Length: 244
Image (spheres, rainbow, N blue to C red):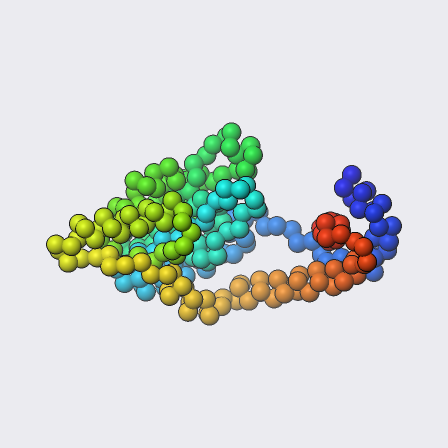
């Protein structure tokens, strides 16, 4: 029905398709890590764990309260491959629950009817190589223990999320308890200090994906030029590109 509507809106649509104006539809990978091999993420985590030097790193992929389209957190994906909304990863060498601890939403059949299937802690832990995986419902209880005694905390401030309150609270509690012993954590540092230099080194798989993305962008831009005409709305233009 949608395709028929688009065809009636523009009778020249099929002719432009035959001329090669449409970019090739890319089939989405069924793999939750977007097709990247697990070894890439493991190697990245190994380098970061070495650089942490007694500190802890906390990354998250916030849920969108408005119900809009979810955009995975780039740092969380870079180190773990996790794209699921509401996920939280804690990296700390020789931590109580291992080097890599993952929190994800628990399974809920009713909510999954509307928001899509969730992995759940057991499946997510196995898929992403976490040493320990918990449900997000125990994050507030487990996180302070995971951060206790860390030299510093790497976490991106500014989201005003419940997780930020937990991290700041854990910092305040740990500093009060460690004041007499002269131990940290001593502050919160932006994760970019660790990750930005590492991103300059590209794995062959990354380079292949970057070239593919550039090619898709060029094809889509060319399609937009062919389909665009005076009076066409942005919605119809997006529809025609989607149907290519």
